[in-house]
Length: 352
Image 1 (cartoon, rainbow, N blue to C red):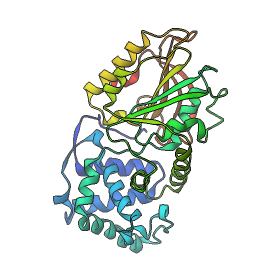
Image 2 (cartoon, rainbow, N blue to C red; image 1 turned 180 degrees about the vertical axis):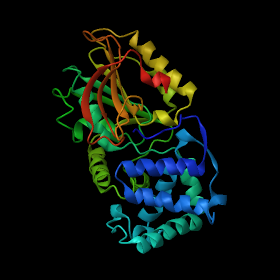
Image 3 (cartoon, one colour; image 1 turned 30 degrees about the horizontal axis):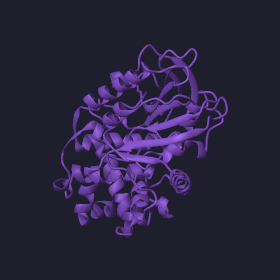
């Protein structure tokens, strides 16, 4: 059965949020990430030594579990939590062997939170900016369906803009149906753009990788190297404001892309983004077409472990009528997604 998921705007307790995140990490094959969350859940259910440091009530879509995982991972990356780092696979550490070793490590996680309350609060106040680079293969799959006309690649909530370099990142032959068009412009927006050229930016991006996902860590490292050679234009802006400012360019396909960010937006911002895309679509021509590509959670009708759907809408090009088409499904991080072909009656993001 698919993992039960509350609606984004539902209010839940911290324990409920962490339990959901633990189950999701477990289903995604990250036992150490799940164990980190278990350490905090066990404390909140018993001694409650960290209870005063973390708010108890949350909007589900704010995903406090991801924020806490990132805060602890960042402290380990900065060697400010050496006992946690000792067993972080992303730092070359070994997974604890045996129940007792695991309990010692989980106690170190709780102590890390207690020792660094300001850092934990800072992490809790930030919207996660994972922008997993494995999702570039989904964007490449969509772009391979656009034909040879050059592309203006636009990303909403782009974080550091790493996936704006999708054509320079690894793809997936199972998802691509043709050659990628040339990218002539790369622009993204974020409320707090991250500079991947700085140590601070690289550490922050690294912290959002789950502590035992070594493959994701390696993908990020490669993407950071690519970012050093391929420039992008990152704008500090609200996603809805940015979407409403977009225009079309004759001779190029404008591709508006976003991934795993819808959960963080309120209903008003979501409605404004979709309305802005529809308004832009009304101005398309055969020489100035538009595509909207998203990789977002779509639990309805999906199998367990693949709740995300790659959906593309197109306007202006031949036979492009704006109807959403699902072209792949899979797990949040992208690798392992498989192609599908499902035409929908309406944009499912309008219902989320």
